[in-house]
Image (cartoon, rainbow, N blue to C red):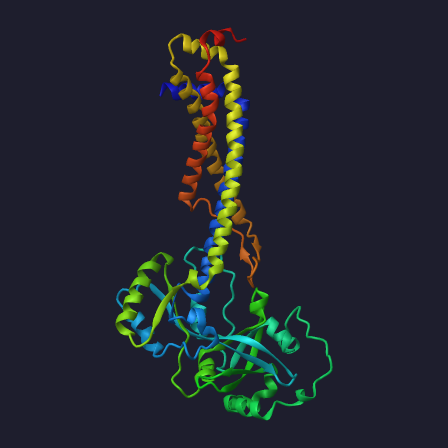
Length: 466
């Protein structure tokens, strides 16, 4: 206690220098905490985005994730409604699962035969109401800026496409897509005048009820896909809207349909199947327990089908790559700031040793051992570190609150809607604790070399120092 009191009094002897050292430490800690809080918010936002889109877990046919996108009929899940009912009734899974919904994804060709254009697409058939419930997931209290799915409450033959699909299919005008310019006319092909008879015959079987209202549905496309028997099948759908998907590659192939329409196109009159059952949990922390229970349930009740369970991190490798990149940046910045703090405190301690050389000689002359001199200077460094950490935490919390109160938004790469720029400091005690311990350790380490030099001084030489 006496050594701590002496260390504090020694720091107050040169208050200006101690304050400048504290200022450097506070700035460094505030930078680390704000950047760490920003990364933590990005982590929660990314996780929330992927969980809203794909759920925490998906039940898929074995190897569908690797090979099934090119042949969804071969990797479909039969009797999927029974599996969903089992999940919802299971006494272990039911309290953890928020939404369990089927999806059917497949590749095909979308054509606007009235304009004589077509392109390959990747279609997703979903239950729009379930997808809207999934989009409301907000376990981390983020500011919600996403809009509901356009397909909700629309007729069965409705579709939503990416703006890239609309541009290629020359639907920018009918869909009123902003900043979307259709390709200049390069000479209308002769075959653009009418839909081919065979395709028209296939589409007529799918779209007979809508034919009478063709005049009120100007944006209409035909989707061609391979059905479960390997033959081509066509569905005519009304395009409600073109929405930018954030990533150009996805935007140019995206088509969203109602699940029933997608199943009718792929399976026709055969038993409908899906390519995945998405499960969204109330809390991400329940994922390991939910996965273990789900695998056990499938092993006992779905032996006839080779099924597997895949989590959202495997489904979305971009999530892990992004977190790894930000972790590397955070580590690099922390090392740089730690180096600056280390040299700042070391310089302060070195100047204190020079100024107090005669005092060190006196202490040694009255019996204080070399270890006592070392301890005194190291504790002075630690006191500086503790004071800098306390002040830095307070300033970082206030700065984080001010940034969050500004309501700043931005649109990250790959997103279609803006997100709130937020910093999480006060709600992250582990990050605060780790940063505080790191700062105190750096401050103590930076004092070791000057303390060792002070302890090695010869008593006579130190007393002669002027």
